[in-house]
Image (cartoon, rainbow, N blue to C red; front, side, top):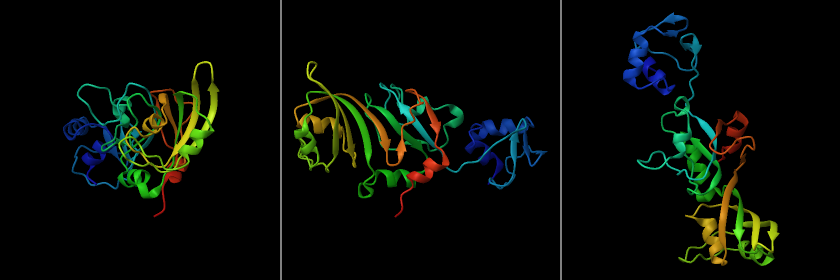
Length: 240
């Protein structure tokens, strides 16, 4: 790999910015100053440093974001704040994108990566990757709804969902509110909201807490993120 490409993919700037960086003689390769971007390196074995600090090359990046309300699940938008706007510039590697989408008012676990194969596997309907959500519902959810959701549901536009698992966590009869947990294995547009609408209820708050084997880190405040551990990355990979 060319040195200038390596530096760009390690988030050290655009190709033109990297050129300036190299001319400033701040870059070393295996302990020797290097000012040519054309220098061929082995991105995994050569030691590249800027101002003495070693750069680590990663072909893929994986981040867990606790998505807050009011932010859209997109890579860019001319008006609204996107989930990528929450990622520090140094971590915003080339090709980073959200895996699936959460509505603007939905919070919780969102995976960001530039690993297209993993994203495809996690979203492919035939893989049946489960997503678990917590929700606050306007209405009293009973065992009748638990039974209803355990079977395919025909939505108002004629689409049919796969069976889901609905668990009632708490019911406030006086307020007419319910707290539930629901597990689905697909991702139709506004699916959970539409499922409850078909039962005559309204979703007030929705939060994703798990996707496949990946659970939302309880230490992450809304709007914060962290890199996945190697164990979490391996746990997400699905055998063909």
